[in-house]
Image (cartoon, rainbow, N blue to C red):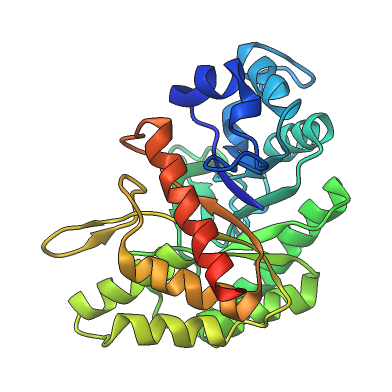
Length: 299
C-alpha cells in the first residue's frame, strides 16, 4: 500500500470526490492516509469536534495510519496516562492499519524551587536516546505498555538526530533489532532520516560515502520486522541538514528507497510532506514515483 499524509490543505479536494484518488485509480493511487495522532486528541475522552468528524469521513474512504509524535517511548519517567488514554480512544474509533511513534524521549522531570515536588514535562521535540542497555530497557517497557493497552503491535521509527550520546552498548541497528526481539514490535524505517544522519556525520567529520553507509544500515535490519517505510525531503544548510519534510524527495533518498524495497519487500510506504505543503497533484506525483520504484524492483 502507498499513502500520503492527510493534510488540512487537501481535506476538501480529497473528500469532495474521494473516488478519483483511491488506490485503484490510475495516476492517483492513494491506498491509505496517515495522520499525526495528537492532532485528533480531544479535551474530553470520547469527545468529538470538527477534527474527529473530518477524520471519520476520511476513514469511510481510506484506511488510516496513526503516526504519533508525542508518546515519548524512550522517556525514563514513563508514559503520560492521558496521552495513552487519548491514543487508545482514537485507535478504537479508527481501527487503523498501523499505529507508530518514534524511538525517542521527550518527557522528563522539572524540579521546582522552594521545595515543591518534581513535575513531568514534555519537551515537544523528538530527542535521541542513547543506544545503551538501560535505555533499551526503558524503551521496551514503554513499548510493551502501549501494545498491552492497545492490544495490537505498534511500529517504532528510527530518528533523525542532531546530537548523539557518547556512552553506547549497541549500534543503532543492533538497538532497534533487539527492541523488536524483546517486544514483538515492528519498525517504521524512515530512509530520509538515515540519509540526513549520514550527511550530518560527514559535516561533523565522522562519516563518509552517505549512500553506502545508509545501505549498510538497511542491510543490518532484519528483513521481517519492517511494517512501513517513509520517504521525505530535507533541507541542506551550510553546517547542518534538517529533516523538515518541506520539499520533494531527492534522488539519493529514492535510491535508498529502492534498496529498502529490495531488502524488505513491497511494504507499506508513505510519502511525507509536512511543511510548505504543496498542491495535491505535486504530492501525488511523488507517490507515483514511489509506486514506480517498487514496481521496477519486482518487475
